[in-house]
Picture 1 (cartoon, rainbow, N blue to C red):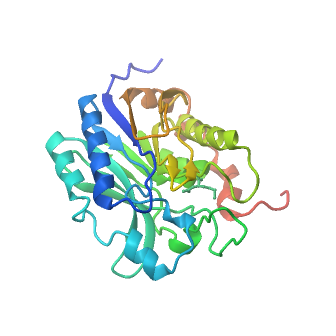
Picture 2 (cartoon, rainbow, N blue to C red; picture 1 turned 30 degrees about the horizontal axis):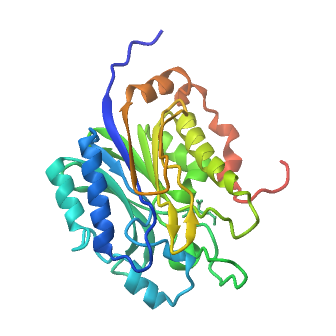
Amino acid sequence: MNAHIPSRKFGLAVAQIGGIDLADSRASVVRRLLDMLREAHGRGAGFVVFPELALTTFFPRYWMPLEDVEARYFEKKMPNADVQPLFDEARRLGVGFYLGYAELTPEGKRYNTSILVDKSANIVGKYRKIHLPGHDDHKAGAPFQHLEKKYFDVGEDTWKVWNMDGIRTGMCLCNDRRWPETWRVMGLQSAELIVLGYNTPAHNIHWPEPVHLRMQSHLLSMQSGAYQNCVWAAAAGKTGFEDGFHLIGGSVIVSPAGEIVAQAATEEDEVITATIDLAMGENFRKNIFDFARHRRPEHYRLIVDRVGAGEAI
Ligand code: CDT
């Protein structure tokens, strides 16, 4: 019998955004984020998860000249004048946050990025998306494009875990959640909390996937990733309609048991909260998935040696 692990409770919020149209200004979006930050704080949260590419519409759905895309949708500095009010209010309230945005570096690299901001409004972590879905060519017959492979470079750094106000916190972005490797790299760093934002179109342009399966695979990925890695997991979606293009909702907070403890009920701006006990992950880490005792990496070689599915060994 292991010694009792004392409770470590924390108020966590996810702030789902109900769609951003092309014509919406950054300032108007930041006002919506501010409203939700204040609501989350009022409901006892110490940290808020915002979506992927949270400051603009999901622009990879449009085929456009790169210069236009860089000029209109990428942030050259973070924080910048538009986003500064969010940092100021976070500092005033003592609430940290995760925010996704498109980053243009001084060297001209373009990343799908997220940052981890602590309760003093310091950026303590940055992640650049690794699994970029979609394509880089123009799909003439498709109802919309998914041009992440055209507009973004692949992030060079692996998934890391940061000390965010005393909580070992990791980040990823959208499509990353579907890959077990993403979660495991952070699980092996003893992450306690993994946060992510997403933009998942309700319709798959590559094949006629039934719409309900889009939600199912999102929830399945969140629940299995959390359970198999003994972490709390929180996902914030950009949802509803953006200029008529539908994105799934289903923003969630999931426990290390794989149980959904809070889930958005709408496809609009919506804050969900939960009081999470970080001791729960510790219990799973000690009593079920004690990696050091049970993992057999000598049998996992194929996972790093082989990229695509191939012949039986
Ligand atoms: N933003 C993002 O990564 N969306 C993908 C859509 C995949 S379909 C090309 C996702 O995994 O939800």
